Length: 184
Image (tube, rainbow, N blue to C red; front, top):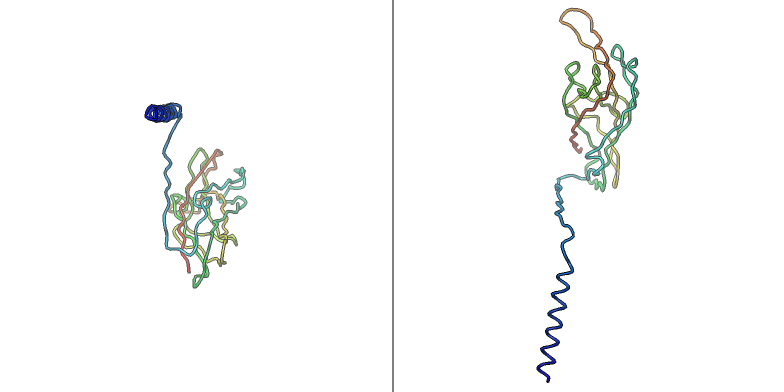
């Protein structure tokens, strides 16, 4: 009798385990990839600063006429968890596709034509593509590097003569800039 009770209990457990597996049908699955980088740096660049979009205002073509500039739009790069033993400041160098009219500025892509995008420091002074921006002071913990961007009407200079303003064509535009930080 003990053997049949033991056998019955084992069969009940086996059936329960089999039915539990049957009710756990695959209802979807996937793979999550985590990636990043370990860098030799006193600060971490905030993820939202690594890949950000700066929304420029709608800009009147009249403002850009004859090399005119739009109102500057501020943007920033957030640095987190800064531990500053000997490092006190940081610079940013911006690179990207230079404009044919002015290689110091970014070329714009899209249906808009006749202008280029400039990046400036927090005082409004132009930062030429490929040149380091003036150093900005850091503080322990979280800090922000402050910049500005504006659109500027293109000017071309023929071999002989005075600069000529490009025709401003209204439309949508975008451009991309990469940045590299250096700590001092």
